[in-house]
Image 1 (cartoon, helix red, strand yellow):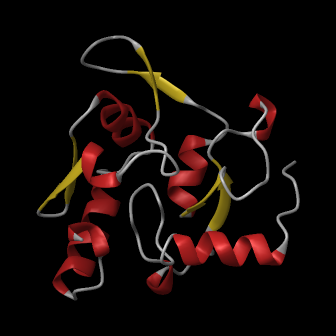
Image 2 (cartoon, one colour):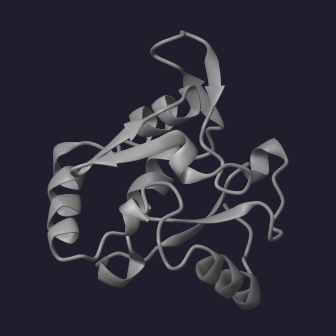
Length: 139
């Protein structure tokens, strides 16, 4: 069970994220599913419900991430933390090539892998959004 997120904090998180998932950058405005306030460091690992820990996450990223903090990097075989949208910049860890989110770092690799950024359904959806000018990934 997760902690209640006060409405004011929820609004701040959504505004800071420009209403996009802070992991895959999917825009909340075109989603059929409600986005969630996700604890970057989960509560079970001591993460707090304060402005410096929550992120706006689409349901796909949030469900895939769960309470995990990282995974094994497929390239180095080392335990690696996920991309942290509070302390890291998206474009330092990922690039968008057509509709594919390509990792640039170990943190990017484990995030792309575990959060399943490039599975077929998500790629097709991202392609449509890019064609319509609705995906913010190039910014």
